[in-house]
Picture 1: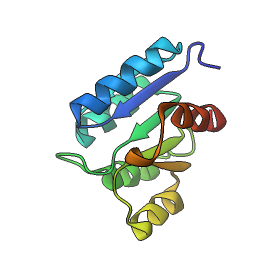
Picture 2: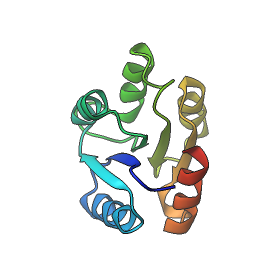
Picture 3: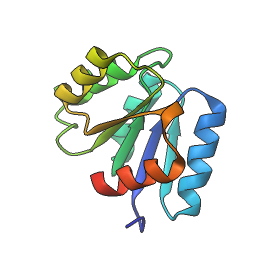
Picture 4: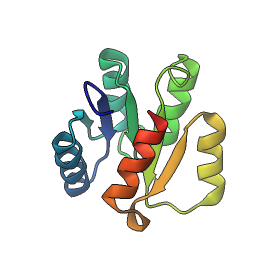
Length: 123
């Protein structure tokens, strides 16, 4: 499943970004990274990843704004997005799913194996 699949991780917490990047690289995924929403949106448009892991609390442009821009540009129909957050605000998460995100993962509640399983299901 991982062969030639590119995951864009948009995450501003360096330790989480590094752990996810290294973990998915070891499992055969190609990884691209962005540390703020604006750079993330640019990477989405330029690199056309197969899947996006998107944090909601980001500098410059937050994750919801990235989703809105993706929806406006028709990118959510082409590229699945999984929200990756520590926010447990049900209304915000439901709004993200309604906008087109496929799934959400609460960072503190999931193991890497759970995350990998969800990614494979979405891909």
